[in-house]
Image (cartoon, rainbow, N blue to C red; front, side, top):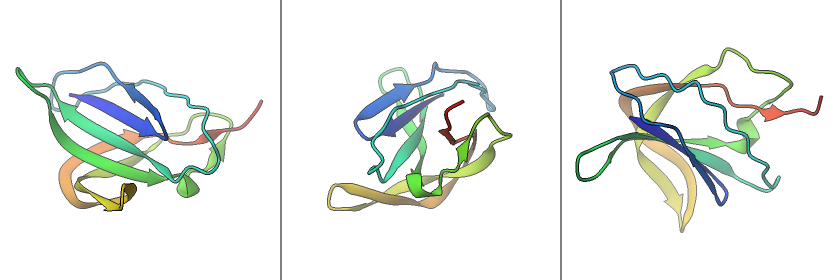
Length: 110
C-alpha cells in the first residue's frame, strides 16, 4: 500500500509498504496559498496490472492547527466516496474499515 497526498496543484506519494499495518513515517511539507480549501489523502493498494484505491479523506485547511513541532497525531477513518460541488471537492463520505494516523499542522516559523 501507499499514500497519495494532494493539496492545491501539488501531489506527493509515499513509498509502497507491505503488510496489514504499514508504517511510512514520512514527512511532507508544502508551501501553499492561504485561499486553499483543503487537501486529499488517498490510500492505494498496489496491483499487478493496476492499483486500487482503499480509501480517501478530505481535510479542510480551516481545521488544521498551527504548531512549531510534531505532535502525537490523530487517527482518521478513510471513506469510499468524495463529495463534490461542480469540480470542487467538499468532503468525503461512507466510512471504510481503513484508518490512517496523521499529524497535520501548519508549521510556524522558528
